[in-house]
Amino acid sequence: MNHTALEETPPEPPRRSAVGAIARGLFEWAKSLSLAILLFLLVRAFLVEAYRIPSGSMEGTLLVGDFLLVNKLVYGAEIPFTGRRLPALRQPRYRDVVVFLWPEDTSKNFVKRLVGLPGDTLSMRDGTLVRNGKAQVEPYVTHTEPNADPGGEEFGWQREFLVARRAHAATYRASRNNWGPIVVPASHYFMLGDNRDNSLDSRYWGFVPFSYVLGSPIVVYYSYAPDSTSALDWLTRVRWSRLGERVH
Image 1: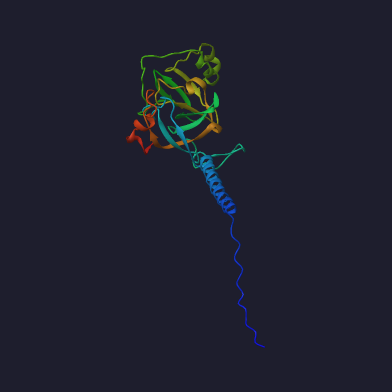
Image 2: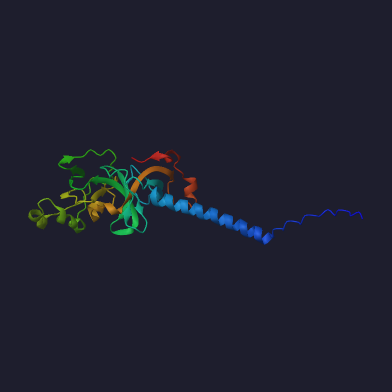
């Protein structure tokens, strides 16, 4: 008897459901987004962070409306939730422009110029900074009110750090342009704004602990001239010449 061979038809592969395909697509998208967010957080925590200049205390060097990229690695970025820092590339130096937590309210970041290192003796005479007995030439400083010299008890904190403190504390009277000599304590820094007559800085509220130092600005990546009458001033009033300008 002859038997005719029957050709078997291979089974069809199971069809992917539309719901399954969408779910897998969403999963892949979520993974990519999570990775992007993680990389962003790591870069922001350890490498660079964006910062906007909100006030005119550094005018002459930085302007209101400047957006900066801040190098957080240079002084040793803080490891989140540990209170520890990564190894620093270098220590803060005299005349560095520094971003730090404001000691009066650590929810706010300030940017000023470092003019006093631990152990330095500082004073000011008629608006001229004196460091370790030598008057400083500061080409980056601007004066908008050179003839005014307000004083008051807001400078009274300096008494505790005066040279020959006991002899002079009782009669010590300081003002914006005339104060000291005071000694910068260990692990602290003294910061001044370059717009010397319009800056809320260490003269008023004291020293900055090293643990409050966040980093140093690298470059102005965007800048515009704020205008309260224009809702689109960030687009229409761009300072093109400042884009990419390094911070010194």
